[in-house]
Length: 634
Image 1 (cartoon, rainbow, N blue to C red):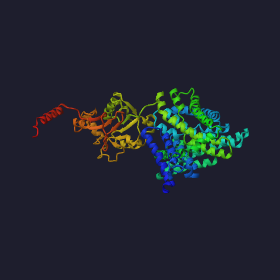
Image 2: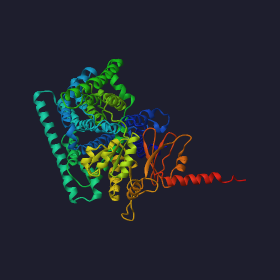
Image 3: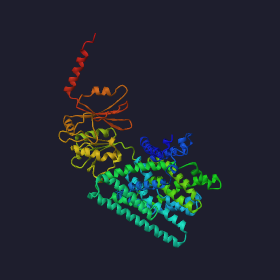
Image 4: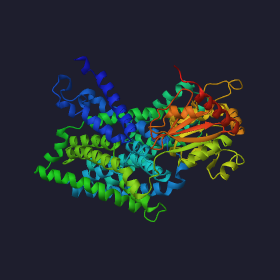
């Protein structure tokens, strides 16, 4: 039993719990941040009530298990997460969202800070200094909660980019506001001190930003020139992020967040070889860190923390009332007024403004920074500082559940939800893809045919199919074509190697289980397929175009209790190919060289078969008569 109580087991439990919660969220289409919070509470304070020795004090008790290491672990994890968020901030995204993001930073931050301070003072009963510090922290939303939430929503690129940019840019700003107010509280409130503190914070922030820009520029200059081998690029980048964060944090607390964010933004907007591989590495690492940190932070919540806010009041009922009042003000007054004020007279449609005004979940950064400054203020003897920790957890829990579970419903009510990703992207305009696309359109499946040739797309346009002209692997093309709207991508060009490259490059973004390719001519271009090879025999594009010349057609057949898949196969020509199955939910499952979807009553099967010629029909009729004229056995 003692072995099960080792730190190694605790770390394994944190990893399994965090990643497992994210997997369950993906399977159930529930907000991952809410599930991670629930799992963290279960393995933390809830498990302490299990009457077994191993669960004494909770299966995961971060303060007991990690001790002094907990704070640096969380801070370094937040640094890497913010850097990965900065890597996703490409200035091209600001063509639609730029002014809105600028307004939310320049106007929204001061308004949100002021309203948050008022809510903290009059709602939660905090002193003005503590309320101002907490109000500054609460201007953050953060990529740790916005990112997982946006993965489950389809609300258009403008809304997604606004929320993403606001979350990542405001994180270091909220930390710096907390630094400023903390310095003001601890050094006194005279005008001279305010000027000195302001100069100190601004100067250290400027130095931190320069450090981040220098690191980002240095990486994008050294890496492409071969000064670092490929196998060391990802580890070296991680060490530079951590080193830059620590160096800036030594100069001034929390300015390291500025360094890593600026470093990520610079790298995102400068050309660099291996950027795709490095970005994938950082995304994978960020997912692991988000999972782990959320479990650790939610596991620290216990009943003493919850009741500490009540005990700070003379009457526990007063404490509960203040706690609830503050959360209501934050959810229904502070955030809506802040966003609507910042976006007043902007070009953002009202429906999108109202959606953004509701979405503001807080996560790791808010809890981590609040906990850090609460400990410092308590040590300094500031009255009311002990209320910050339960308040921060209350804000995180309330906003995660309120916004996480209502975001999809609110998007639908406002008419900005783009629905499920049930479209199909066919890469390569030819007779086979056009005929297939036309059939899918008749089945009410959105279809887009992409090809760089305007001439090749003419036939698709004549069939009134949606087309996109451009190289699907071009980053500019991907920014104009929302790949999130497609449930399946099929590479069907006349270049086998290009088909494989498309599946390999876009597999991480669309999902490897959602990319397919036409079979390759191995005599002409032997290679390993990077996506599923469509249909049982894996026909090449030349085979399919020859079938088109012979008049092959796509047909759809509904499977019922009386007419099953075996009946369909018996009626089809022996050369016919099964292409895909459409479920009642419009989910498509494709047949491939190594996959046979499960077919149930109510499904629609799409097949590709030769035409019914008169000669063939006469032959089948003769065979049927001969079979019927045979004498019965016995």
